[in-house]
Image (cartoon, rainbow, N blue to C red; front, side, top):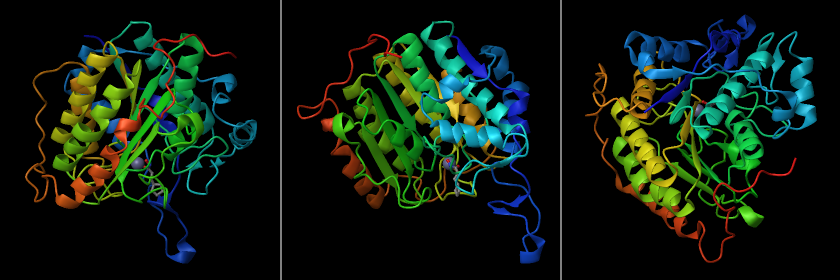
Length: 383
Ligand code: 3YP
Ligand code: ZN
């Protein structure tokens, strides 16, 4: 078992500036200068834990390269890329007023995309069995003509399009376990039945009024977007039930050639930006289910790309658990926190109701009324 691993020091040099978490510092309005939530620390500490526990020694380090304009333009509009390029010398905002970046961040964002592209290529070319790209800035909110929600460019969507073009992958499933809705990925593949976009998230956190179970794609892509908005407070019991009743059946119906995971860790029990209760054990079980599904369905091909997750102390243990599973490490590194016995970690009735609503839609994937996605390992796309 070989597991690819991408991390680069420059990922920590993407500068989101002085904020009070979400709000730009402004002493005139009483906003004391502080860190932005999306700062290097949580991700840097994931990497340090991976080094310190010796897990890194079991991984195959992959070097990222910067994504090219051509790759970025597989997903984004020339206008969006031009605006980022124009602001790269000064720093600016990626489009929604909530996605600040510093001087040179476009170069770092290119390296983040390149980290996912490299991971996917290494898996498809059988250099490694699976891979984890620990990248910054994140990507799953970015839409074709704008950055959004701390994201500059759509890392996973770009890597998906690049893999279809250069490797001729037939169908790809993207499973987004970040606590926020994967709206960017959904938008890019809205009418595309060759990419199954699945998002589990806390109901209506970000983007506001997005990620409803009724959002299902359109045209040929109808049924190939599947959202599972979960109630605040959902813990390991609810998430694992959602995996068993929605995600795994959806993957088995779809039979992807490659599984991509938007690996956000902000559904953890301590996260400042959401109200869920996942623990390292929960993340380990989710990863185990996804890795097992990949083994059954697509020769184990699964690539995780890091997204959100903001508790600097807890995220490293959550991400470490996922990387352990990818690497086939049997003995979990001990979790020093004690959140598995929080009240209501087990499935609650209102969580089950939300799961049932999504479960009803699973049979439409490749069902009698749905379009059939591309054959496995189909021919390269034109262009
Ligand atoms: C963006 C603005 C408010 C919430 C925030 C979410 C960022 C994130 O982690 N997305 O996955
Ligand atoms: Zn998030």
